[in-house]
Length: 316
Image 1 (spheres, helix red, strand yellow):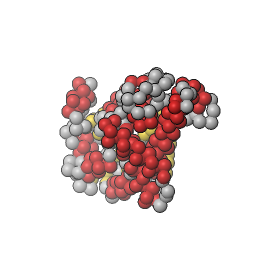
Image 2 (cartoon, helix red, strand yellow):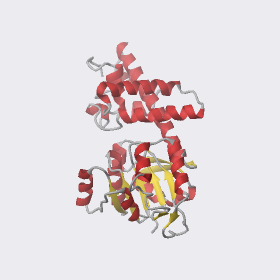
Image 3 (cartoon, rainbow, N blue to C red):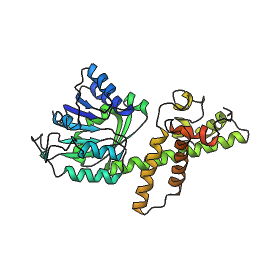
Image 4 (cartoon, rainbow, N blue to C red):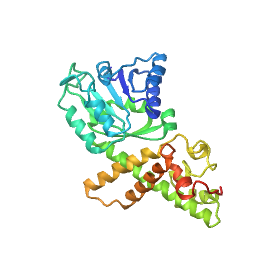
């Protein structure tokens, strides 16, 4: 009963599919998004829609947010008509943010929410809790319900919310205290960016040396270079079906989002006093791709638009 009424805010490419999977799993949803066309689609499905985050909060036991940036998350939580708009009393006992944002913002919001009080006690919960629960997986994974959730915050709340996570994903990993899920996510995306650039660079070099990308891919995938970027998300057009590179890099994970996540990783590395030479170089490459007009293309477009050259042929 503590999970029966779920609010969902942020119905973009990922959020809309996650919300659909919750509906399929039998949860009662109330939704909000700034895009009126998206709200109309959900309304036509019989899903209640609200004009503000606060109205979603008032109708929900749990609220999930899936938003583009830290600024959007802060606004949805603390802005005018935000989730926390109604003073120190709040209806939802659990707030889950699946956005990819910086760990500091995640931790600060969790601390703020811990000072609120529930309007009505929910089971053993007398005060609200927040989990940061960003995801790994593409739009395809969001559609299929095979996302991986990286969760930070109260472990008891994490265990209580598992049915929600498994309605949208195939795995969920508890990372530790508040902000640790966000930290894990930016580390994951940092590794993914560097891996994709390494595979793209090696495939482009191979072509220049007379070895086809298909041959190199076969070698990678049965040897020590094997990784997700080579065997599940290959960046060379035509080598693999169902991935963005085979549809002119349309869909998938936009380069502008990868650039944003690398910025988050770089800022976190500075704060932690860590060296980040590969983060810095990847950051420069994706910033250049975005400046070159490829910000909406999948991040694997680095192969085509950075390493191979947009007007040069490539040998599959």
